[in-house]
Length: 228
Image 1 (cartoon, one colour):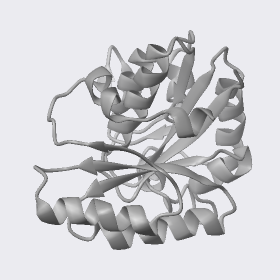
Image 2 (cartoon, one colour):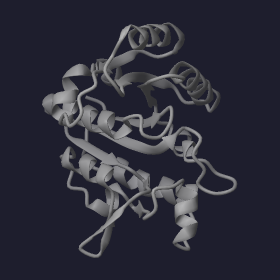
Image 3 (tube, helix red, strand yellow):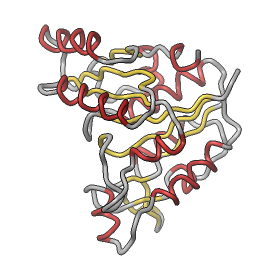
Image 4 (cartoon, helix red, strand yellow):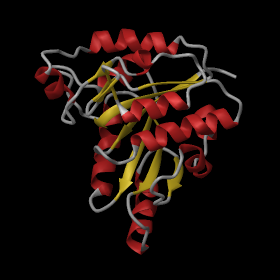
């Protein structure tokens, strides 16, 4: 099969991007596909054995079959759980699109059939005063998977994000509805409304399952639209 790579973004922070990204990798591995992943920039890292590590990046690493080091998966690890450009400045560092593009191209050359690159926060996250993290997907020409956290306001956030993705010239390969609390009639209606408004296929509806392993979550995802 041809090699497939996608960029996972969200309508906001804390909407389940890593949950979806890891579940996509798990679903690919269940099909006996080789997998790779990257979270180029991660804020909110903790020091482990003298090195900054990010829980989300470690989760992605668990579902990679390609032999990638932690530094390849998460080359920019930042301590404070704030916007990446602010966390970098706090540590006396600066972020640049050109460097991230080079690092990501290295990961995309890994021996993998299916690669996931996970963004940070939402689509319009600044790297510096001139560049956005969304430009990484644009430069690499990666189709985008949008994670929508199902809660009050999600329709507006999802539609605006989809419009921004389209305006940037990259395709919305699909979207995932991630329930952030127990579903009710309003939540189900929100998903139905989004299905009629968003210009990409619904890849899955994830129930509210705190603590569920990505392998379990993967059963709710349809990988076919991404692989076809």
